[in-house]
Length: 265
Image 1 (cartoon, rainbow, N blue to C red):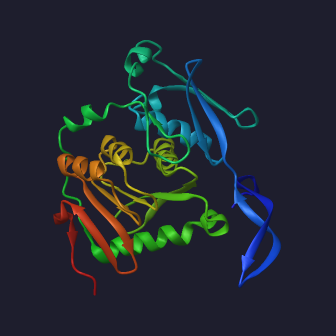
Image 2 (spheres, rainbow, N blue to C red):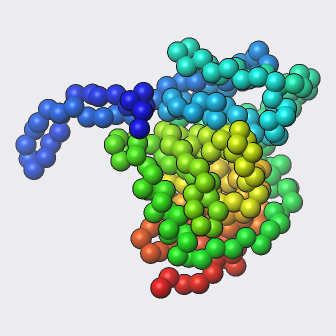
Image 3 (cartoon, helix red, strand yellow):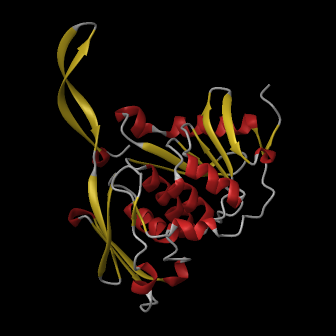
């Protein structure tokens, strides 16, 4: 865990009816503004690490960037809180984004540019990915083991891309949607296909998380937390399996349970 992700703050703690002053480790929250082709696009409140992945993953999740071949350059200016992205294609971006911005339920001033109604009309995902219930719990256990920043502060979410056997990459951030965008950006940079993969998350599964996954052709989302009603409706329509409350040896399957095989032993 980088010291740049946390700061010590003096607090007063009550324990067993007694007051004590201690140094507590607190997660750093900072605004980062993404500039696209010289124009301000969005400001995200985030954990200040893997900012290149965050910017690229955000652009990919919003359908602005499809692949690294479209990228001309990217510059991260951490001290200024800026990420400057230039795409080779300069025309048509304003029209593509006009009227699409939505303030979401995400932590850290979540913002998306897609139109949710467009996704309701999208074609269902194709694919026969399947996984055992034991593997679901193993992936969630692995996510928790890697959550070093969460263990130190209790103030962040975790997300990972996985196959049926193991986590392939992992990120933490104050925003659950940021954590997912960071793993998406890493996949872009490292040339990792997402189409036959799984997203594992510690956070609530809401509609914007589901739609990010759908754009990446992710067939299965697993979380320790609950989904929203709109997330469930979208997952049903888009043929995505939604698993929530994956804790201990239990989980809830909300949509398309045919992808989950074998009961717990």
